[in-house]
Image (tube, rainbow, N blue to C red; front, side, top):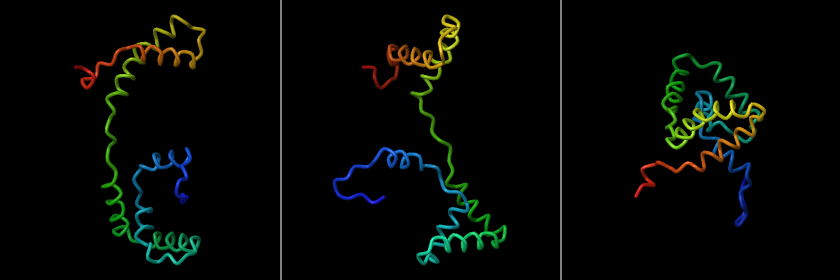
Length: 127
């Protein structure tokens, strides 16, 4: 959606911008390469691309598969979330045993409160 000057983005637009980090697949790369045939009618263009994709040989499809594989790379791990996961794995069973009647939501809230009380041991915060 085009924004007018001074118009703020909505939350859904911000979420989709973040969520669209997944690399395109082979077919999406093929459609991008066929952009020169786009004449304004999207439905006709989509049908044309689908027909052309089905008619491609395996060797031609492999070119797009290799491009897609090159764009896929492993996500870097977030060390801060790893610390939280360690904390949760230690404390969850303990809370579950102490308070068997608690709901999962209540346990999650307690875990978050408990984690916020723990001082950060990150090297960037040490002076």
